Image (tube, rainbow, N blue to C red; front, side):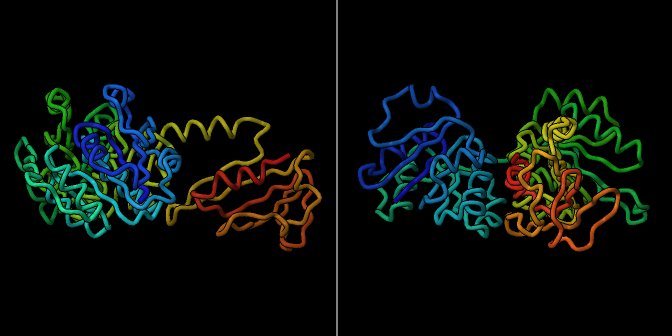
Length: 384
């Protein structure tokens, strides 16, 4: 089998040593180089350094042809995000993830992810489950950690309170969460903030006139405590993409929250998170980059906007005298599947016979482009 192991900590290193690396092709991914260098790794194992929630890094590790992936980092949400990318994006047949909150297990089992809560002694059991061999004596599951919840339970919202305002859960009490909560309260909405850092919790609970819950915003017990069952919207705005993803998923699928919004630090994670069920993603990095890119005169391709109803956008391409597309018929442009030219504007007028139109310098081409195909379309249209 081709096996990818994420995390070379206590559990991951023990699992690697129990796998027959002569019979199986093994790749290990870890964020810390020191984790690999601290001990002599087994022969025949390939090591990569980096954050495995990066789709490109997983592709470099061979995820497109992998038979199994084990997400064994110390961070539960990281494991769950990686596991979902493995299943949904790369269709890896066998995916295992270490988790600690039993309330999450049913949803992720339905997604085809095997969830395990194990100690180092449980490495035997995990390896046996992966390879189908018998587990050695003494292999046990570790105890599940309770989810701490602090502050009074948020009261139910009176029926007569539904006056057009929303009940919004804000996960993350940092600067983004603080200013977002203040803006929402000023607009007449009801807000509860969830913050897991005690120091930040102590500060924000004194500065914002709304309930603040101390706890992990992706934990079912904490979300229930905060009144997620009656929330209209959850905004996950922590500094970690994996935490924001799992918070949105738990809110939507465990409590039926109608709308979820996630802050995304790495723009490459936006498409992944939308595919995994987040309704709306917001990336300040991507927004700034798009503004700068579209201001450059030499850039002929501009994204006019994304469509809220689907994961797609409207893209504008300006034909220049340097473009290889000038002098060619519009129908000859080989765009990726699901992309479509919607119209051509020449001299301020819209041309109706799109397919038979020969493109000229100065033409503007409008196209419908799925977000996953944006980079490919830019590469095709920008050739000069």
